[in-house]
Amino acid sequence: MRTVAAAVGLGLVLAGGCTPTERAPLDRLTIAAGREGGVYYDLGKALAGEAQRLWSVPADVLRTDESVENVRRLDSREADVGFTTLDAGMAALRAEYPFRNVIRVSAIAGIYVDYLHVVVRADSGITTLRGLADRRVAWGPDGSGLRMVARRMLDTIRVTGLDLAPAEAAAALRTGEIDAFFVLGGLPTPTVTDLAGQLKIRVLPVGDEFSRLSGAFKDTYLLRSIPKGAYPGLDAPVLTLGVPNALVVRADLPEQTAYRLTQLLFAAKPALASQHPEARHLAHRSAIATFPMPLHPGAERYYRDTKPLL
Image 1: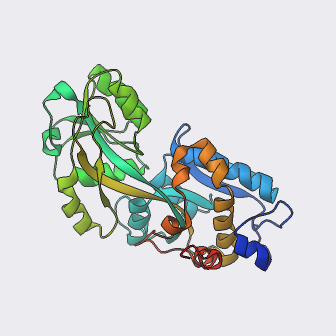
Image 2: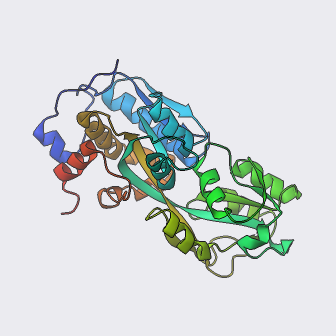
């Protein structure tokens, strides 16, 4: 049975730090992360290492299919904290596909924003999302946030959907086994960069779908642009969706535990950034921007105590 720690001292609260001698809020930390080599998994390993160092507790990093599965692992109490895309977290709160029931989760921090890439061969003749009709499209594994957003994008387009992870999908596009694949990532996304070094590709604009999706899924997505030159052969900006990522917990997690987890996250920022550059975007001001997903009261108290808006 996990136990909640006693309140920390005022000086430590104001500093937002953790010390190895302070009693841990959990007797073991389990992090729902992702696939090995992915951003979630790399960040999860770094966070687990800092929990072991600062709290002196065992820390486990779960290999998962990412966002959707991570939320389910929280719900089943197999994990204490997990990484997810904001749209997957909101789908859980609203009992929308792929969730059948409400799963109450709360954010402790917004971390970074992914860019949606829809990649085709440059010689394919496909120039729009509508051009994917009746094509073979890799839309990510079941249980991933990628699969969920791809299904939403293709809601009115009939395709043959294939459950391939991005690295497998890039290889399949190169050999002609598929016609397109979806991938979420920062700029540049390594999977896309590597593929663009092997054959000429096109990234499809999907900005015209923004109004439909933002109307159906209020305040969940951002309109973003992949800049000219982000990838070899990309000679003009490409409008796409931005998908925020967050670190989330169960809504019923004790307030002090959520407070300490938020505190740990910021104490671990140097370790996280050394594992993956996306962690450099972690900052108090952006971390509180998780709307429409609510912040956990423990995280809210942490941000008040550390006064991120001053």
